[in-house]
Amino acid sequence: MVSPTRRRVLASLGLSIAVAGCLGPSEPDGVELATPAERPDDDWTEPEWRPAEGAPSEDDVASTTAVAGLEIPWDLAFAGDDAYLTERDGGVRRFDASALAEDADFGPDDGDVILEGSSLPDRAAPGEGGTLGIAVHPAYPDRPELFVYYTADDGEIGNRVVSYDLESDTLETVLDGIPGATIHNGGRITFGPEGTLWVLTGDAEDPALTQDPGARAGAVLRVTADGDPVSEPVDWGDGGDARTYTLGHRNPQGIDFTPQGTPILAEHGPSARDEISILRAGGNYGWDIVRGGPDDPNYGGYDEYDDAIPPVVNTGPETTWGPSGLAFYDGRAIEPWENRILVCGLASNALVVVTLRLGSGNEELEDDDGVRYDAAWLDDRFTATAHTLFEGEFGRLRHVESGPDGSLYLLTSNRDGRASGEFPSANDDRIIRLDPA
Image 1: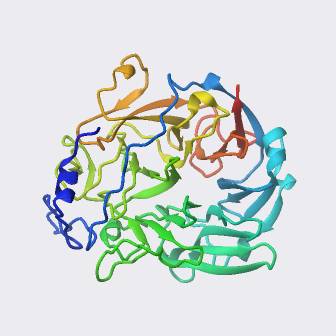
Image 2: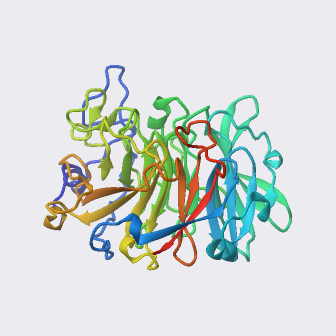
């Protein structure tokens, strides 16, 4: 059993802090860490799943270009016989899911454009903004609805989530008022195990917003398919938004769930310091007050702030992944990768495979050639080990999605103006399928 942290001891004693309360030191300007008016119970239990043995390898899979010639693909969602793709400077394409799983070398025109970017009201694509995340209603095809997160400019840059009914061809706003900017728009959306919609938002170049529970910035929002708060929301007190599940994030772009339904998040750090976190309801993840260990020269340490939830991975001030899309792979097709976290790297031009093992002191890791994250100030429920695969082979990787048959699909982002070296190549951008070798 994992030993309790100081945070857990405080929680077990019933010590809760009002919004803007802080047990640790505050910044000179008086900014403090926001916390719920009533701290939700930490319902974490030891997981039943375990990662595959050994180290993951590129040799475990075979790669095939399924679709080439795309323009900055951003997100991919499978539902029934269909696969829905967003392109940041465009709209939504639909491909046949079976064809993506079996064939190769499709072009954009092999998919139908079912929603033009121009059909999204006030849509804009400043900097990193545009048509971003996509999710499909859990009751699809009985409810043939897509959900799209995009950047809008109606005199002020912001972000929206809309639903699109494929049968009636109607759009409805699900969630508005999400701060936006040329960078740090977040953008990933997905339906969770209980059928609620999870929405990741960035700090919109205004880090102070991330400590405001009512701002919808630098947050993980959890809503119904209609955009309403869930039945048992986190209580952030007066001025808080009941849609806010966690806050204190910089620019999260990856989320998925373990087999037990626990949400795992990836977010971009400042000048490295990228993070993978296991989310807890009502958690504050520190930005921009806290972002590292006790020796970080520029940010407060998680060990100093009892109200900051530490990540399981922080890459430190010298290493950057540029993490975007994330998948917890619980499929059986690629057996050596089972129950591991897959994280797409933009800056690193790589796929990072993160293995979580319970607690610390895992002797079986002594001969592992991965990078181990087990510092005392990190989330002590797990020890994380990261292996970097396909470095430089495909260029910038935006997202990874598991297909219905257990194959994996990578989206490249080499035409977004930030690629270097041999990228973009002639056939970029691509959907790359990874099948078991």
